[in-house]
Image 1 (cartoon, rainbow, N blue to C red):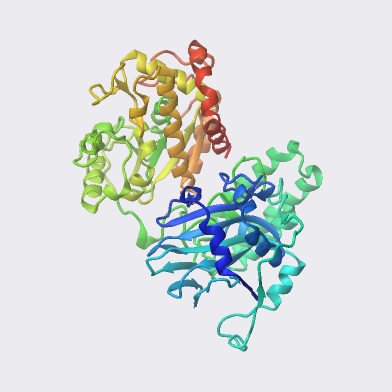
Image 2: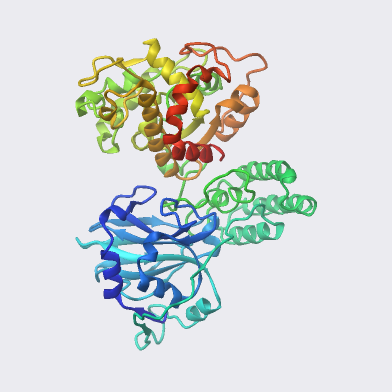
Length: 603
């Protein structure tokens, strides 16, 4: 674009920030860091894109950065400083979510070197310090920093403005006529007081209009490689719009219409899964892996999901199954139930294990996993039950997979005779091991079980007091009741604390780590089950969950669910009140994670 900014002045403002201001990339890619400048409500700890945008305290400390955004002159969405460490990279990916259908990403390099390579489609450039660039995020793109020094860019997202598109019309593309002789406008720092920046206040629909849905579908299906199934997908899309339009005319965005919208949307998703699974877009991404984040997740705001909280990084993301060449020939989409301990996961596991075609080892995998050299916490000084993906060497992964395979049985007790096999596993410690499990089982799917935290905390207190869940009774350095349930990072800081604070820390640490890891997964890898919904209508919840996991369900659940094997006292919705006084002491300190877990479960 025809602008050039003072890179030295920008660098001075950026270098003024302490390293503690930088956040890890939401997906924790090695060497990728961000410092939020514009975010939802100006909160630097929120990475979502649905909500009114505003300046963070960091932007308010940067007058020239603010001037840069003024001169580009657009309505601004999420905006960050993005740092790439020496010898790090942004891996090849295409941006396909709803967020990217309407937004342009602006890059202003601040700290860089000629060796930093930006690749988009077939083109490759070095974005020099102070320049201003935009590019086609729909195409596969990547960044490679071959130098040992870090690279920092201003990365700003916008839907544009009249002035912005005028700048774009006067821009130049590398390799096109006139590029070498073209000159930019130098934008020097000034002390002039400027008006407030323009920020997004509306960015995600409550309910998409049929006309917006139609525009997205026309675009997407027009970007598909020729295939015999394309006509069927177009027909299903047309039928969907024909059903959505009268609903819109009747209900608009009124909540009374949401159940009907949801029913129609779910039916459309199911129909598209039948016909569009083999379709691939021109950018290499499976059509169903675009349809979900672009439309299905956003068409109606009944999910409570933070849209756009991370950007997918793989050109081909998870679908019903991976491409033939990439399939796991032994474990087909293994299912791991994950949750803090005492969330009801055993009851869900024992029920779901009745689905035909699923295989389990019949119990939790504590001994199976920790019996392998290199996986017991004592080999890491009893730091925690977390397992770093780095330890999942090919040899160790093979041993773990072989051990599971040898013990798997179906609901009738028969061993797994054919390959691939669908594994179901449930162990609370695995809530700290999602990245490790992803490395060992590349097609892994996760079911996050959400339960009222008050009930969970009460049950955890009960478990400690019962003495039945002593995980490490001789934990070095620990005093008080023998250590029960999973071992969380930072457990040594809990020595001497009352029991309610110990279990609160166990719950909060587990939940925070688990949600961090689940939110980093590609779309389709994580599903949510709610314990309360499961108890109220187990048949409906099991049917829904099996549908999401592409499993069959052929059992009746009309009667009362049996007690799980690890039940201490019979369940009751108000049982937690036995420990109400203790729980109310710790809830205020957990509020941020409580709210986050509820938002995640609302998906």
